[in-house]
Length: 268
Image 1 (cartoon, rainbow, N blue to C red):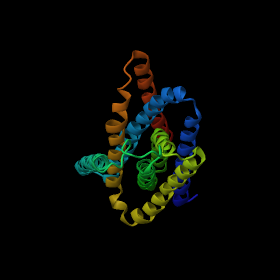
Image 2 (cartoon, rainbow, N blue to C red; image 1 turned 135 degrees about the vertical axis):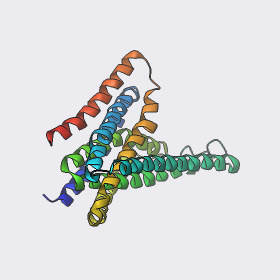
Image 3 (cartoon, helix red, strand yellow; image 1 turned 90 degrees about the vertical axis):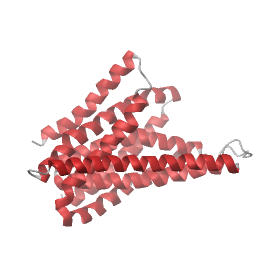
Image 4 (cartoon, rainbow, N blue to C red; image 1 turned 60 degrees about the vertical axis):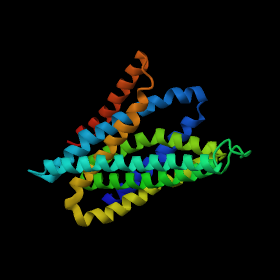
């Protein structure tokens, strides 16, 4: 099987599996879903940390060759800053939109009798647009990893799929809140997941001619996974601080890291 075929298969399966698993989580009763989600996030956190620190960064440093460590470190820092600024922009847009609704009366509680008004519909389409872009970037990340090493690609695909499940659950919640049926929400989420295939194929064609840039692409990819784990997922885990939940979280983070470590070990 060619590298391109493997990239297409990995990106397609990862997107479809994460969307399908998120759909199954939504079928759980509300209480069970609320209890299970933090543990899915814990496993995803471990998988992201493992993929970034045990797989992507070591391969990036090795590929850069002697004396390339500082350049890889700079790419990692630049990636972290870029994702920080990107999230700042998204948060600013969100807050700006809420302020606009408050001033113009287009938000909830300002004369709209339709419980699924334009604000909810706009949120649904924005979530889908953002998810499509996110999945396309995930495809680029997975392709860059496969172009470097097959085991690295597998580890990266697992980490990406793991963190997509809790995110997809949140996306489903937004779509259902906008009045969409479960079936329609599932089909649209499956559709957006295919953007990963497009991103993966585009990266395969774009990155092969500039193979020397791959170590730095891997460093930025590691920054992406680290940022999601540390800035987005871990703070949410701190909301539950009882001893039992904390031990389960630590254990599942360890299982996530171990999953990536086993994939890496099996290839060497």
